[in-house]
Image: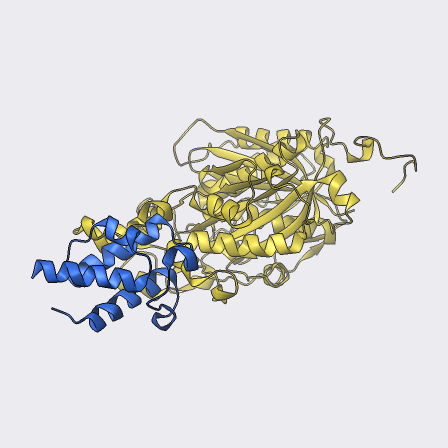
Length: 427
Length: 84
């Protein structure tokens, strides 16, 4: 660090974002993911590039076309939640609260933190639909016996509001639903709220747990999911020539975002920074991405510009990479449009984790921060040859060492939702 | 008609299930409001489950007015006797 030693009056230039607002530090991370239930465990699994997809007996029993998914490994729920709380919430909210507990513990917010300046910003693509599905199946023919907590358990903002309640965070509490981009949207919007002074701290991230008969059956009806039932571990293969659809995952990831100046002042451990964000919409097709990647590529450029950077500053791209032909091809074109002739290396974590829907963007942002700081690009699991190899520099086989640098993390969702974050390494 | 002791077992079981505790931790003198800070939805869930178990229409007032678990059991016993 350079800079003067004068009295700290107002935000110093070093604490200012290129937009003129405040810089946003990440001071806490918590994950409950198929790759692991602690950040370092999950990151090690990511670098090892082994898929976490496994056969799920209940999917086989109901004769779904898809027999496998990426599930969060069992952990001691009682260490996080009272049995009374657990009974009133669904798995999506449970995973979110547990990831948030880890993130908040990691951040070690000061005891005098004003609760009205702490917000909760959460993304979920599917929300309470799986628990509403469960109630429909169990009580659809006897509605008078429905559990009293059905509405609070299934409403889409339940995870965010339960989180706010748990800690008494009284700032802006918002639930974002931009399908598979929801977690990224939540982090980006949370960062904006801090950048422009609405919040001092945001507990932000995403969650979903939709390994259910109706939700998975519905995705399968669109042929969006892999049906590689004989080889689940080979099913999620972003950008690979033999991909046949995405693999459903579940989980939650939560980041504690904080004003850079106050985080520095209190000596917090800073994992990195949310430096840039942009979102836009293809406005083209309700589920298919526009195949030319023009709007998605523009979203990447806007996010990079928002960070006050140029494409040359981006060390690598954490792609959305779902392992569907339509996404991967359009995304490769979008990356090529954004970066032109000198594209940075590209990775995609869904080969390992599957697609956490609303949880994906937040989990991938957490991974991207570690990658940015440690100067490593994880290999794409199950990636052999790729028809997109002429457009983008895909990392396969083993992790690739790079200089610590900013990472662009992409999320694209049904509805044509595009959302991109630029994550800065810890300095 | 169930005995008071049988009603008490049912009540303590339902309460402990909703509150995530053990039946043995719910006593006659336990106050759901004071000891557990029970909210209205939890109380309604307890009422709904007891209605099913006891095959009895339960007025919400009986639940909200009960001073403690023992009092609620007494009220339910009275109601059951009235039905019979």
